[in-house]
Length: 218
Image (cartoon, rainbow, N blue to C red; front, side):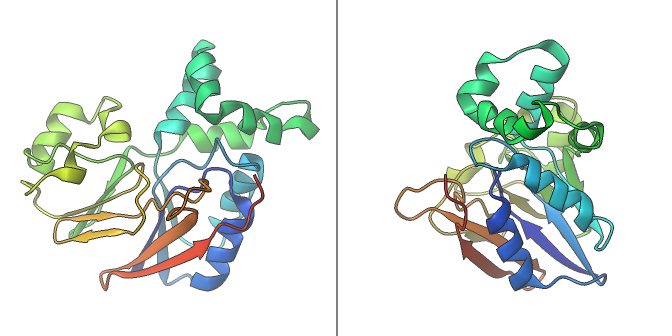
């Protein structure tokens, strides 16, 4: 089964559709979404609707991003301030036609996202891992925390203690990072800044990168 990892979507439903059209995945592929489906972009509702449909057609893995964690903190504990300043209001606005009601299927989707996923050759996570620790040690220390959703220390690390290649998103970069033990594929789809504004996927194990310019007006 071929693996295709897809970076941070952030409510850019039209861009997601364009990337999927380019990828043309089949049931022989496995899509691994790296998290951050909601916030900042205009149509988080549309993104989740598309992903719910897609998983009926193609094998999919959905990881949790820090923005899904912020959304759950709001839903469970009413912690609005941090979510809203990080784009949560745009997510709520995308549900305005439903009276700003988040459908149960969408909430279940968010709750069922995974903190990480691994194969014999790759470890998929939203934010990253501590670079000076093995993957096994990262899991022992941090698997029940939110560190995997926010970690950035690995991006500037000269070397890694990891047993396999880590594939992550979370931190926008102008070009995908493609190192022996690190692949980073958040190319800032939702951001209009020069050098960003693309949604990126990578086919594995061949490490073929596919990027689509942002299609959504924000």
